[in-house]
Image 1 (cartoon, one colour):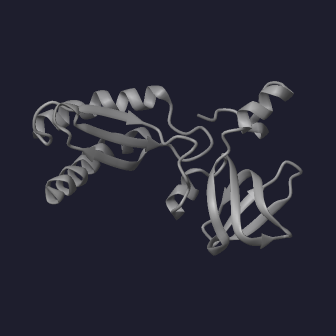
Image 2 (cartoon, rainbow, N blue to C red):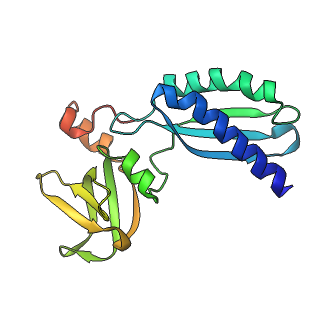
Length: 177
């Protein structure tokens, strides 16, 4: 069954990329779980930068992708197609994850202290230079060597902190999904 799963994932990714690319979106992950009546095909899409993918983006990809998948008869029988954006809890692991999330609020933890600390919170500034750069609220940019990053993800608490202070402005993560 492994080869069938790999074939479906590979082909579904190719089709999803054809639909997503013209919309300025990228396919982040494709998951295929054949489970009888509850077979799942999940496509995660994202838009690089602070705004990310919206609900309307996901709906559009789903609407445009579904007929292509059905025509190709890629998944035998009934299946659930889910198109979503990666959640804020999804860890940032690859350079592509960091690139896509540039401009978003993040939390980064390190294996060893950097500048005397092991946890950083701020806006991700990605340059692809081997460092994860976090611009903190005071404007200081901390360069964290990529190999010292133990965990990184979007800052799910950012919206809560901002809402307690008042409406979000561009510098406070407005437009996050």
